[in-house]
Length: 102
Image (tube, rainbow, N blue to C red; front, side):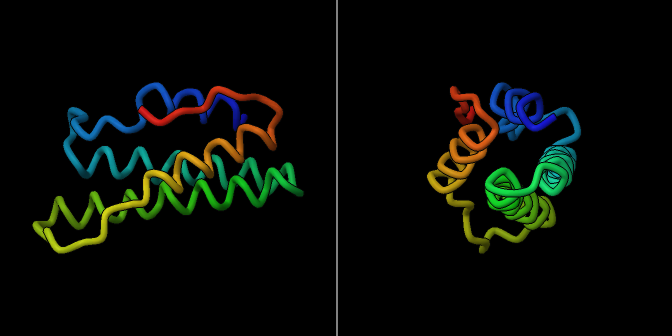
């Protein structure tokens, strides 16, 4: 369920220092993005659009972490303000509030 994924992510998702390093953290972001995107597609409507936008943010962050892990220091940082807004939009579309990053 999207609410569970968002709440789980908001309490621990932005920890860049997971036991497996940047690759493991990137995989967590990708896995969460896939779950949220899938749940959004099942829900349709406003939820689907908001889920897609937030999942795209997560995928961009995962890509950045993978580049960082491979030594590429010239990558674009994710837009955390947009990620926060998209998370709020998704929470609102799902009927709850209180989403925050970190």
